[in-house]
Length: 81
Image (cartoon, rainbow, N blue to C red; front, side, top):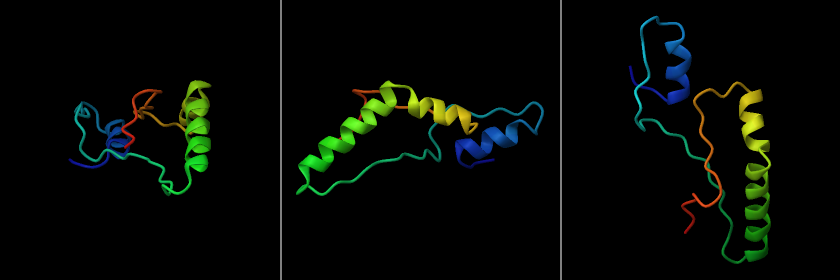
C-alpha cells in the first residue's frame, strides 16, 4: 500500500504484522514564501520560526495533536535559497 506516511502509520495500527517502510514517498514539507522586496518581513518570520522550534513549541504542538511519525527540522537544517 502506498500513501502519505501519516495515513500509513494510522493504518498500520489496524493491520497486525504490517510495517511502514523508511523512505520518502509522500513526504509533506511546509515552507514559507516572502517577497524579495520585504526583507524585514523575512527576518521577522525567520526569527519567529526559529524561536518556535528552539522553545519546543512546534514539537509540543505536534505531540498534543497526536502527530506520530512527524519530524521537525531544527535550526541550521533549512534549505533556504
